[in-house]
Length: 303
Ligand code: ATP
Image (tube, rainbow, N blue to C red):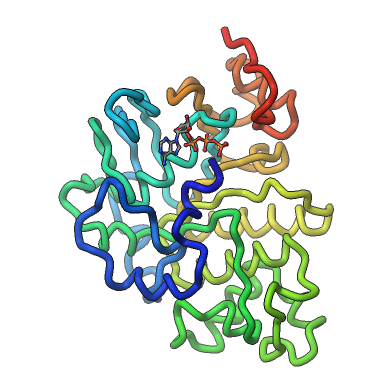
């Protein structure tokens, strides 16, 4: 469900609450914020670690004891690579994001951040490691700069320019009267859905996360916005580990590896071309183009 990460995170005021979260996770509490709120010095933490930015080892989880959702899921999200997560609706993709963001704790198995088990880290420490961009992109009344920097108000002009470039927002800056100081309307005014998504990405990238979790938009993007988003993802993956819930063929084709989830199980992992020949589940998803069948369609037959 798209709403998993979103629930409880909608209102901007709640971003404030992210700073006063309890140190330990509560299994019932919904996530209050969707982006990290601290800025980190460049390259201080990235690239100096053994292991992947995130590793799932035989991870099992259910929201309730009687209904497991993830069954011994294992995969890694390496530094400076793009990993795509695909699977039908309900396969467990958003649940993996929620576990990575420590909104819930696994029932068994391990979650490792830079090789360190999550059990050794506070929730705050894990959150410092990641940024989450989901499909609910919020643009508030304020300048474009405010919208990019609200979680990092001390960002320098150079840092803002860097993420504007990374997120392919230069055209928006040129178009908007006043550029970065130009006001955006309550709901983003003239911005397209793709542009709003990229503002959210710029905001997340400003925090220089070691791991970026992105739930790719399912809404229709025009070719220009889709190309821009693909470029942003490619560039972001040069900077951090990127894990994308992917809904588009264009995204998975660019991914370094694709993890295929089916009913809460990892059934295949590899690049697009390889999976086309080795994974029937992947082939069916890819044939559906959207990589996620509509909730109402019958489940594909897997072999
Ligand atoms: P989609 O592509 O539709 O977003 P998904 O692959 O992200 O689907 P999840 O949202 O992770 O799938 O859901 C996996 C399973 O867990 C589903 O059966 C769903 O109904 C269930 N689920 C999700 N969130 C909750 C929750 N908060 N409480 C109980 N069950 C939940």
